[in-house]
Image (cartoon, rainbow, N blue to C red; front, side, top):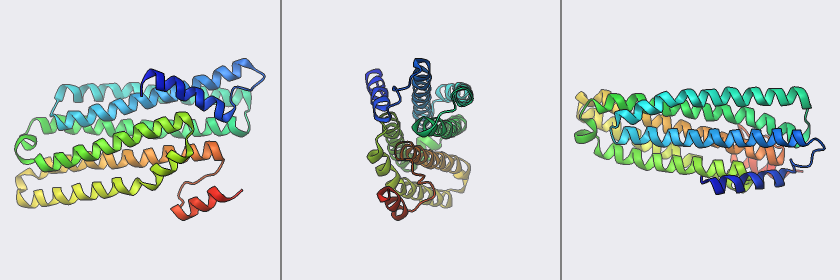
Length: 255
C-alpha cells in the first residue's frame, strides 16, 4: 500500500465511522494514532510475509535472517498498540463505535502478530532449504505451486488491509467467502509433496519443510479472514465469527 493510499484510506476510515466528531480534540487524535499504528503494523507484517516467502523460493539465507530478526519489531508494535488501547479504554471509557474500534484493534493486532510468527517460519525453513539441493533439483513443481499460493495469500492480505483501513464491508465479506480457495490450494500442495516423498524418500525432510511453509501460508489466510470478520463487527456491530456463510448472511440482513 502506497503512502497516498494509506492516507486516503485513513481519511475514509474516519469519515465512515464518524470518529472525528468528539468534543475532545485529544480523543480524536488518540483514535487517529491507533488507526495509524495498526496500518503501520499491517504494512510491516505484509512485508515480512512477502520477504519470508521470497527467502524460501530463492534460497536466500541473508533475507531469511532479516525476516527472523525483524520479528522483534512486529512483537514490539503489538505491545505498543495494546498498551495504547488499554490507556484509552481506562481514560475515555468509550462507547458504541469507539469501543468497537478499540476492541477490534486489540483483536486485529493479535492476528497480525501471529502472521508475523508464520513469516518467521519461512525464514527458519529457508535457511535449512538453502543448505540442500531440493530447490534446484527436486522441488521445481512444489515450489511453483507454493509461489502461486503465496501470491494469492499476499494479495488477499493486502486487499484485507485496504478494506480494514477503508471499512469496506463488502470486500471483507468477499474475502471471507473465498477463504476455502486458499484451503484447496494448500491441500493440492500437500498431496503433491506426499507424492514427492514417496518417490524419493531421501527428500522427506526438505519436502516437509516446504509443506510447513505451505501450512504457514494457509494459516496466514485464516488470520486474514479474522481481520475481515473484525471489519464486519466494527462497521455493522455484528459478530460473524464461527458462522457459516448462511448464518452470516442472516446476521447481515437482520436489524
